Length: 205
Image (cartoon, rainbow, N blue to C red; front, side, top):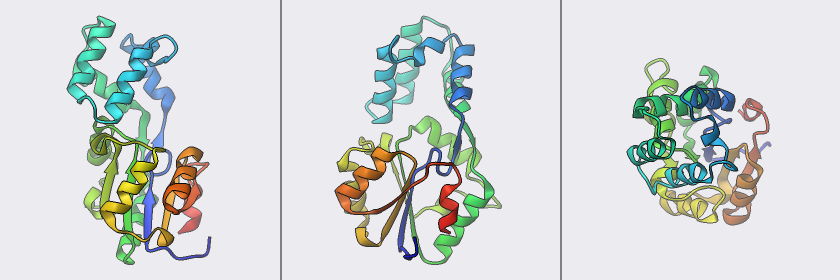
C-alpha cells in the first residue's frame, strides 16, 4: 500500500488493543456467570450486551439486569472488572505510531464497537504513555455506545464522514473484521486494510 493518506481510522480491539476473550470468560465464570456469555443458553444476556453496545442501556442498568437474571449477589465493580479482563495491552510501539502520524499532520480517528466499560479502562490504564493520553492520539473518537450505531451498519460510516468532512478517497481504515471492512469500502469508499493478525498493520507505517 504505497499511497499516503491524510486520514487514518483505526478500530480498537485486536487492532490497537490486544484482546483475551478467554480471560473474560474465565473472569465471568469465576463470578458464576459462565453460561451467561453463551448466547444459545442465555439469549437475554446476548441481547443485554447488544443493547449496551448501542447505548440503549447504561452500565448501571446492565449490571442491575445481570444481577436480576442471575440471582447472584455480585457488585457493579465485580462485573466491570470481569468484562475488562479481556483487555490486555496496547503496545508502546503502536502508541508511538499514533503520535507520529499526528505529528506528521495526519488526521487520526478511532471507530470502534465498544462500551464505556471497556473504553474507560483503556483510556485510564492502556493508553497512557510517556505523559500522553487519549487526546494526544486521536482527532476524534467514534464509539458505538455513544453513537447509538454499530459496525457494520452503513450508517455509522456515513456518520463519521458527515461529522468530520473527510475525503473518502484520502482515507485509510484499519479493522480486523471482514464485514466491517467490506461495509466501509462499499458504503463510503474508504481504502481498507484488514488486520488479520494483531501486528499486521504495523507494516503500513
